[in-house]
Length: 375
Image (tube, rainbow, N blue to C red; front, side):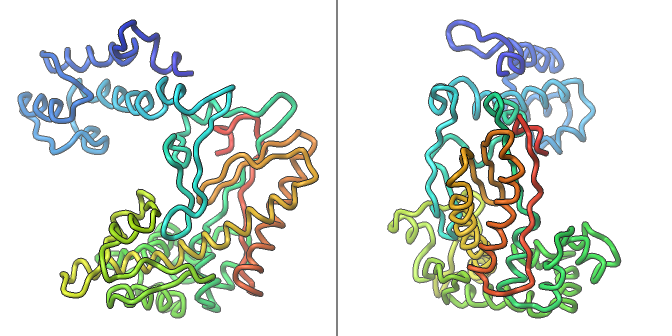
C-alpha cells in the first residue's frame, strides 16, 4: 500500500518517487527550488510570488489561486503518511503481520487510554486499508453513538436529556427537534459546547437554548467548571479525582507518572490562586470536560470487562479499542453473536456505572473484512 501511495524508495534514504515528483512540481510552479516539507520555505515562496499567507494549513492553501497549491496539498498529505505510518513505522511497530502498539489503560487524568508510541489511537482511514481479517474471519467494528451527551444525561439525571438519550436514535437530531427547530448542526454544537466549554459567541447563544430545555444537564457541567475556576476538585461518576489546583497540571501529572492525552493537554492547564482569570477559565473548561470524559472512561472500562466475559467461550478476540470504538476479530459464523455481545455489554456497563436510568448506549456496528470499510 505504501508503494502504491508513495512510489518506490530510492537508495540512500531519499524521498520516495511520488513525493519527489510532487516536490518538483511545487518548485516548478514557483520557478525556484522550494522544500514543501518546510512551512517557512513555502510561506516565503508564496510571499515572493505576491501572495501573503500565514501558514501552510490546508484550509488556507485551498483559498489561493496558484499552480503550486494542488501538488503542495497532495505532497503534505502523503508526507504525513510517510512520517507517521511509513516504512520506519512498520519497522518499529509491526511484527509478524501484526501492529503491536503499547497501550496504557486508564493512562490519562480522565481515565482514557493512551499509547506509548505507534499512534494506535489515531489511525487514518487510508492506513485502515491495511487492517484485514484473517481468511474466514471478520472484523466487528462497533462505534458508540454520541457517547458524551449520553453520559452527561446519565450523570446529570436531567429528565429531558435522559428521555432523549433513552432512544437508540440520533441524539443530536432529537435535541435539535426540541430546542433548535430541527437544526441538527446547531444542536450538536450546543451539546459539545456545553461539554467542552465553548461559551462565547454563538456558543453562548446555543448554550442558553440548551439550558432552557435541559437545565439540570447544563447546570451539572456549569458547576464542574465553577469548581475548577475556584480551585476545587471534581470527580467522575465513579470517583476518579481530577488533579489538584495547588500547582500546574503538568507538574502534578508528571510527578504522578500519568501522561496527558494530546487533546486534554491545553485544557488541563490549571489555575493556581493568584493566577489570571484566563488561567481560571482554562481550568474551568478542563474540569467541565473532566466530569463527562472521565465518567465515559468509567463506563468504557466496565464495557470492556463485560465484553471480554461475553466472548470468553468464543474464538473471538478483542483486538483494538479507542475512546468510542471497539474492534473484535472473530470467525465469520460468530459475527452476529459478537454484535449481540457488544450491545448487551454496553447495556450492562450502563447499569453498573450509572445505576437504573433510561439512558441507552447504542453502537453503530459493521461486520467487515477490512477496517476501512467500516465507515
